[in-house]
Image (cartoon, rainbow, N blue to C red; front, side, top):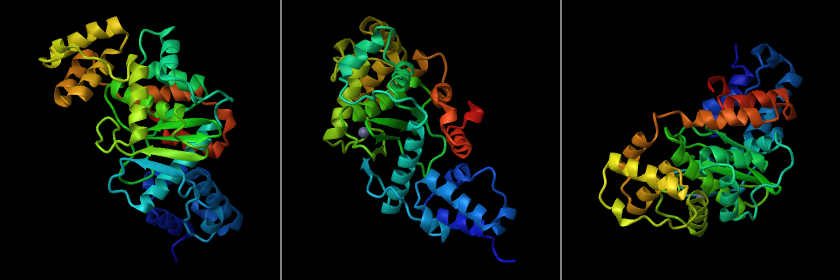
Length: 332
Ligand SMILES: [Zn+2]
């Protein structure tokens, strides 16, 4: 018997560069191979996949994979990604980001909010600007923030993505972390991109690598970093006193816990600032183990909040399943 058409379709999608995980997440639950005989079901399958993965629906009816969101993303610190990878990433970012923006009520977004202003507004009700309060601010301003557990490319190649849809946007984190501070920096950096207008409406921006570690930082990257540092610490160049010059992981940890409380900088974030300034990453990363009680899967906290903030009734059942799978909510 000839290969059935959905097997062929899956092969074409894989050939375009999409990961099996992304295809599985987008594949509708209602499909079964007996439906291959029904032209309307086959068409519906293709329309659903096209919508979720950012593909042109008509070519997909003829098993041809064309990405819709061409030249809609800018890439920061691009590594070995090919043009095909970029197409996959930008289409996936746009279609998932736009799905997410549909799940929140109309809101203000971050555009033109100064880092100092956002920081003082968060500090009015919280001790620190940290991952939890930043994620809360995102949802409060109608900017969904999620941690993607399914990546569009087989090789991850994505630190964080941000899209702008109208004046609002959505932030999709990809970086894994066992402590909240590194992810707080990434989120603050992405908020910076939105606040500073780096993402044009209808476009995406992909931070391929860790913005804090990359060397090829262009002007926008430096601006987003300065925004993030101001938001997290109150200064674009936090002054680290010389008493930190000689330290090991435990002494650094106790110093940042003390100084952090005094300056209202979350201690793990302060430790990362020192790593950033002094490029002493091994000691700093090991200090995080002394600052926090234990390593945790930080993505779960991000997606647990997302689960409660997303208006699930705003999505079609098919899209609900897709978002649910992308956020791996079964495991949250
Ligand atoms: Zn960036």
